[in-house]
Length: 208
Image 1 (cartoon, helix red, strand yellow):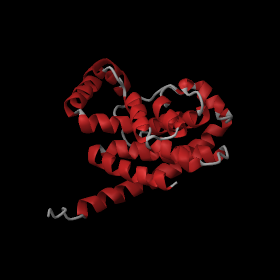
Image 2 (cartoon, rainbow, N blue to C red):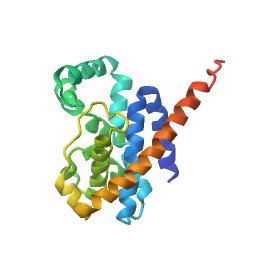
Image 3 (cartoon, one colour):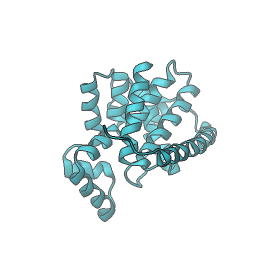
Image 4 (cartoon, one colour):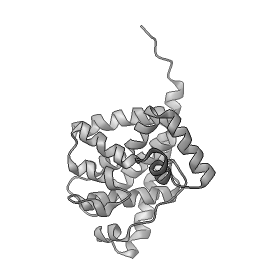
């Protein structure tokens, strides 16, 4: 739990420096993943929330370290009307999920965190933690569909029906889940605004 909090704090800082919209998107995914995990009575919903918070960490790494390439990606997304995922594959020959997976290995994160990060766009590839990966996948789709934050493009990924089925939720559970998610996102929007406002009011750091 302590390690998760330290990682979360580090990622918050990196995302705030990179793109506020991406920070909000990841925060929203973490909150919705927590809602789903609690509905399913998962033993450690906070761990799944951490995986959801970190699911797009590869995007942060790309933007922080490949600024010129990131600009080319943005141009392709807008000019060719393609998803960020597709643009990454074509231009970089690697995508943010693969970058995230490599970072997980570098950090020696357990598979229960690494698999949802690596396979949230392709949950069927998750060999050992499929339910956790499915939760992060569904949370990502719901947050994108709601338009909360900005995941790098305006595309809403198709919901993987097998991932949805793995959550053992019925179709008539969806309205209630969305309603609960909406409440959480409204609260998060206020929280995000407060954080940004505080950041703007903070005096610049004094260099020694």
